[in-house]
Length: 258
Ligand SMILES: [Zn+2]
Image 1 (cartoon, rainbow, N blue to C red):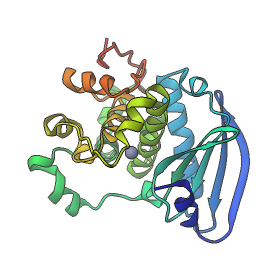
Image 2: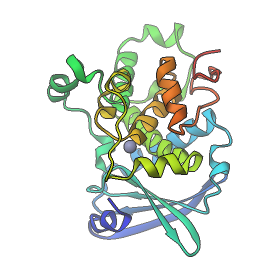
Image 3: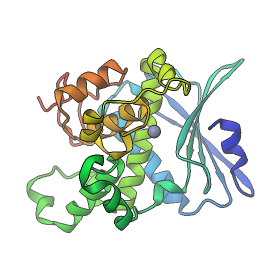
Image 4: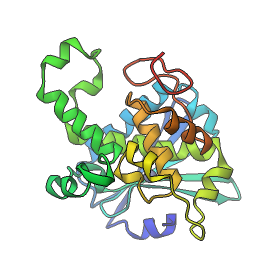
């Protein structure tokens, strides 16, 4: 979907908030009047930016992007749109209400939790991990370093992961434009092999390889471990490897714990 189509989906009055700067990135935040739970969404955006910055300290300065426009609206999809203008490339990050949805358990379980589709999408896996984590307080003191992540609700953990996924698309496009735009050609749809897709999550299955890259990126940021086959494919498609994950664990060139 194009930037224009997404702007048409915005409802009511549009407010433009102040620009802010984050580690080499200038953000312009826009919201429409239908947007609910705005503070939580903004918090998820800030948390996702700081996770990605933590895992890849040069990520945002390497983008050399004059401005990242973030648009919150109830009806817009969660999606990144690029626009070439006479002043250079502009990037729009649309964040719709989908980012705050708790998954529909029965439907998701029926579709994805067992059988050939593999585990749920990576952002839903983050939701599941967070739910398990806060339900088991014993894990708080022995297995994890204290981290801001530990105290989020599952829904805000998922919202953050959705923003990390979208930032993954932006970094992928910047890292390997040829592969990224080639994958976007709808005339010749390319998909990741079912075996690899199943190891990552249901969202990758049947989607173009850019979704595979964004999902694996999200998983790596959150410290998920993937097989050598996954990491090889991820690098081939132009994915960026985090230097370490959000728990502060340093990763080797295969995305594994060193
Ligand atoms: Zn995506």
